[in-house]
Amino acid sequence: MSSLDRKEATLAPYALGVFRIVVGALFASHGVASLFGVFGGAPGSGGTVTLGAWPSWWAAVIQLVCGLLVAFGVLHRGAAVLASGSMAYAYFAVHQPDGLLPLQNQGEQAALFAWSFLLLACTGPGALALGRALRRQPQLAVA
View 1 (tube, helix red, strand yellow):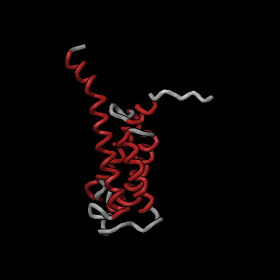
View 2 (cartoon, one colour):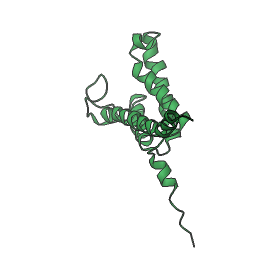
View 3 (cartoon, helix red, strand yellow):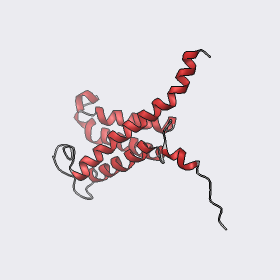
View 4 (spheres, rainbow, N blue to C red):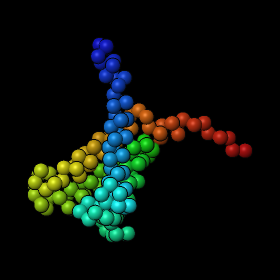
Protein backbone atom coordinates (compact mmCIF):
# COMPACT_ATOMS: atom_id res chain seq x y z
CA MET A 1 0.00 0.00 0.00
CA SER A 2 1.45 3.35 -1.02
CA SER A 3 1.63 6.30 1.35
CA LEU A 4 -1.10 8.04 -0.65
CA ASP A 5 -3.38 5.02 -0.22
CA ARG A 6 -2.67 4.95 3.54
CA LYS A 7 -3.43 8.67 3.83
CA GLU A 8 -6.65 8.21 1.86
CA ALA A 9 -7.70 5.29 4.07
CA THR A 10 -6.98 7.39 7.16
CA LEU A 11 -8.89 10.46 5.94
CA ALA A 12 -11.90 8.68 4.37
CA PRO A 13 -13.84 8.12 7.63
CA TYR A 14 -13.38 11.78 8.57
CA ALA A 15 -14.46 13.01 5.13
CA LEU A 16 -17.56 10.80 5.39
CA GLY A 17 -18.23 12.07 8.91
CA VAL A 18 -18.00 15.72 7.83
CA PHE A 19 -20.24 14.95 4.82
CA ARG A 20 -22.80 13.35 7.18
CA ILE A 21 -22.74 16.36 9.52
CA VAL A 22 -23.14 18.90 6.72
CA VAL A 23 -25.91 17.02 4.90
CA GLY A 24 -27.79 16.39 8.16
CA ALA A 25 -27.49 20.01 9.29
CA LEU A 26 -28.65 21.34 5.92
CA PHE A 27 -31.63 18.95 5.97
CA ALA A 28 -32.54 19.93 9.54
CA SER A 29 -32.38 23.62 8.62
CA HIS A 30 -35.15 23.02 6.04
CA GLY A 31 -37.30 21.52 8.79
CA VAL A 32 -36.58 24.38 11.18
CA ALA A 33 -37.45 26.93 8.48
CA SER A 34 -40.76 25.25 7.68
CA LEU A 35 -41.82 24.57 11.27
CA PHE A 36 -40.70 27.80 12.94
CA GLY A 37 -40.57 30.36 10.13
CA VAL A 38 -36.88 31.16 10.55
CA PHE A 39 -34.33 31.37 7.70
CA GLY A 40 -37.10 32.63 5.39
CA GLY A 41 -39.84 30.25 6.54
CA ALA A 42 -41.58 27.54 4.61
CA PRO A 43 -40.68 27.36 0.91
CA GLY A 44 -43.02 29.51 -1.15
CA SER A 45 -44.93 30.91 1.83
CA GLY A 46 -42.47 32.97 3.84
CA GLY A 47 -44.07 31.53 6.99
CA THR A 48 -44.64 28.21 8.65
CA VAL A 49 -46.45 25.10 7.50
CA THR A 50 -49.86 24.37 9.00
CA LEU A 51 -49.72 22.04 12.01
CA GLY A 52 -50.49 18.47 10.94
CA ALA A 53 -50.95 19.33 7.23
CA TRP A 54 -50.17 16.46 4.88
CA PRO A 55 -47.50 16.21 3.55
CA SER A 56 -45.80 19.55 4.29
CA TRP A 57 -45.87 19.49 8.11
CA TRP A 58 -44.86 15.83 8.27
CA ALA A 59 -42.05 16.43 5.78
CA ALA A 60 -40.76 19.29 7.93
CA VAL A 61 -40.79 17.08 11.04
CA ILE A 62 -38.92 14.35 9.15
CA GLN A 63 -36.42 16.94 7.93
CA LEU A 64 -35.78 18.29 11.41
CA VAL A 65 -35.64 15.01 13.33
CA CYS A 66 -33.85 12.90 10.72
CA GLY A 67 -31.47 15.74 9.87
CA LEU A 68 -30.40 16.05 13.50
CA LEU A 69 -30.09 12.28 13.99
CA VAL A 70 -27.94 11.99 10.87
CA ALA A 71 -25.83 15.04 11.75
CA PHE A 72 -25.09 13.67 15.23
CA GLY A 73 -24.66 10.11 13.96
CA VAL A 74 -27.29 8.67 16.31
CA LEU A 75 -29.60 6.03 14.80
CA HIS A 76 -28.33 7.41 11.52
CA ARG A 77 -29.10 4.44 9.25
CA GLY A 78 -32.83 4.41 9.98
CA ALA A 79 -32.98 8.19 9.88
CA ALA A 80 -31.07 8.28 6.59
CA VAL A 81 -33.39 5.71 5.00
CA LEU A 82 -36.48 7.65 6.13
CA ALA A 83 -34.97 10.95 4.92
CA SER A 84 -34.00 9.42 1.57
CA GLY A 85 -37.48 8.01 1.09
CA SER A 86 -39.14 11.29 1.98
CA MET A 87 -37.00 13.12 -0.58
CA ALA A 88 -37.71 10.48 -3.23
CA TYR A 89 -41.43 10.97 -2.51
CA ALA A 90 -40.98 14.75 -2.75
CA TYR A 91 -39.20 14.41 -6.07
CA PHE A 92 -41.76 12.11 -7.69
CA ALA A 93 -44.93 13.60 -6.16
CA VAL A 94 -44.06 17.31 -6.19
CA HIS A 95 -41.32 17.95 -8.75
CA GLN A 96 -41.53 15.24 -11.41
CA PRO A 97 -45.00 16.24 -12.70
CA ASP A 98 -43.47 19.59 -13.75
CA GLY A 99 -40.86 17.96 -16.01
CA LEU A 100 -38.82 14.83 -16.50
CA LEU A 101 -35.41 16.12 -15.42
CA PRO A 102 -34.42 17.83 -12.17
CA LEU A 103 -33.24 20.90 -14.08
CA GLN A 104 -36.69 21.19 -15.64
CA ASN A 105 -38.72 20.66 -12.47
CA GLN A 106 -36.56 22.36 -9.78
CA GLY A 107 -36.07 18.99 -8.06
CA GLU A 108 -32.28 19.12 -7.74
CA GLN A 109 -32.33 19.52 -3.95
CA ALA A 110 -34.76 16.65 -3.46
CA ALA A 111 -32.74 14.39 -5.75
CA LEU A 112 -29.42 15.29 -4.12
CA PHE A 113 -30.79 14.79 -0.61
CA ALA A 114 -32.38 11.45 -1.58
CA TRP A 115 -29.14 10.08 -3.03
CA SER A 116 -26.95 11.59 -0.28
CA PHE A 117 -29.02 9.98 2.47
CA LEU A 118 -29.08 6.66 0.61
CA LEU A 119 -25.28 6.82 0.41
CA LEU A 120 -25.05 7.53 4.15
CA ALA A 121 -27.42 4.68 4.95
CA CYS A 122 -25.23 2.29 2.95
CA THR A 123 -21.79 3.47 4.06
CA GLY A 124 -22.31 4.13 7.76
CA PRO A 125 -21.67 7.30 9.72
CA GLY A 126 -17.93 7.64 9.26
CA ALA A 127 -15.92 9.27 12.02
CA LEU A 128 -17.18 11.75 14.59
CA ALA A 129 -20.49 9.93 15.18
CA LEU A 130 -22.02 10.40 18.61
CA GLY A 131 -23.80 7.05 18.31
CA ARG A 132 -20.49 5.21 18.35
CA ALA A 133 -19.36 7.06 21.46
CA LEU A 134 -22.63 6.24 23.22
CA ARG A 135 -22.33 2.53 22.38
CA ARG A 136 -18.84 2.39 23.90
CA GLN A 137 -20.12 3.35 27.34
CA PRO A 138 -19.78 0.45 29.78
CA GLN A 139 -23.00 -1.22 30.86
CA LEU A 140 -23.95 -0.65 34.48
CA ALA A 141 -24.47 -3.82 36.48
CA VAL A 142 -28.00 -4.26 37.68
CA ALA A 143 -28.18 -5.80 41.12
